[in-house]
Image 1 (tube, rainbow, N blue to C red):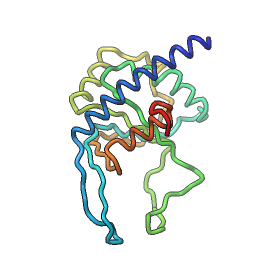
Image 2 (tube, rainbow, N blue to C red; image 1 turned 90 degrees about the vertical axis):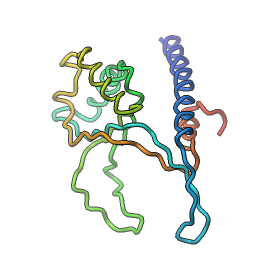
Image 3 (cartoon, rainbow, N blue to C red; image 1 turned 120 degrees about the horizontal axis):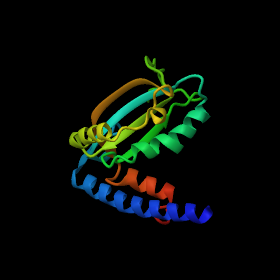
Length: 186
């Protein structure tokens, strides 16, 4: 079992390296450095880049499932099914903290009108890729017992153009690579 897991891990790392470098190169081609001054009158610059299309999907876990049971289904079943679709580039998850409340940069409180357990970002190259993603699943239906029905209570699902604003053109990708061990020494 360990040899199989290690081989799978090595294959995943090779794919991520290749995919990540292609994505970073494509993003760098659409990047623009923006220069100005910050509120302290100091020089400032950042990189603004187009980052494809993102589906923003917020949801809660349906009762009687626990969050642990839900995550077992999500990671052991559902994401294998979603990533079988060649038009989906990646999924990024944001689980809402129950312990730490967000505040404005001024320190002011935020009155959230919508609450949910997690926000998932589904990344696509463009709207055409998203349309092909939907068409692919219409032609390759996931069996009902493997779908989110009865497991995910969706708060919203929106599509939008994604832009990245960062200190450097590849800072977010480089940070992810360092954290995952893909980028060599930090």
